[in-house]
Length: 203
Ligand code: GAR
Figure 1 (spheres, rainbow, N blue to C red):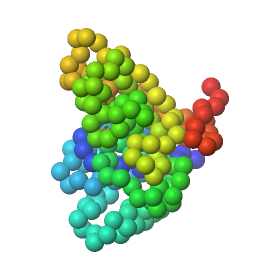
Figure 2 (cartoon, rainbow, N blue to C red):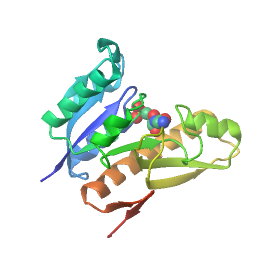
Figure 3 (cartoon, rainbow, N blue to C red):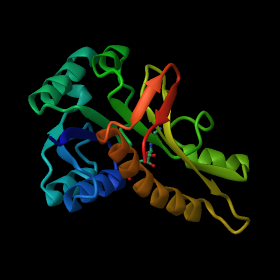
């Protein structure tokens, strides 16, 4: 049976689109059951409609407390039998309670080599710092921001000729390859976590 996954996104949704297309073409054998979005103005919503993916739009402002907001999300995850939560530019920290209730089943992508350049501007921060190598990280989510056992990580060398724009384009291109790969490995039960580390087994 295919694993049901939910993608959480707040913005453009290019990773959502890459995952949805891989699932549709069958290269990724999962069922993309739900898009969870917290931003009514996010371009990801139009992408989901076009690709026929069910949407849960939840605005934090509609709930008095973060706990109620998250409970509304968890309810829908349960209704849709979601077994893996895929964070793709969801610009909101999940509470420790949420993380615990989906322990080991929430992953995130970050556009830098963690633990460097955490936060909302990983590409720009690495570029401005002047590092020669940056990259993309896919990791399990724990209670800290952009933190948890690393599943896949791939480097990108910053060229003298790179501008922030050209680097962004290369990072995003890599993300769209790496994220479906990581999800595929999880769906095949090839990712084992022990302690702080995630290990890939098999082929
Ligand atoms: C991606 O680059 C992702 O790595 C980043 O948000 C972007 C979302 O783009 N996430 C973080 O910075 C997490 N700290 P998208 O909406 O086009 O998928």
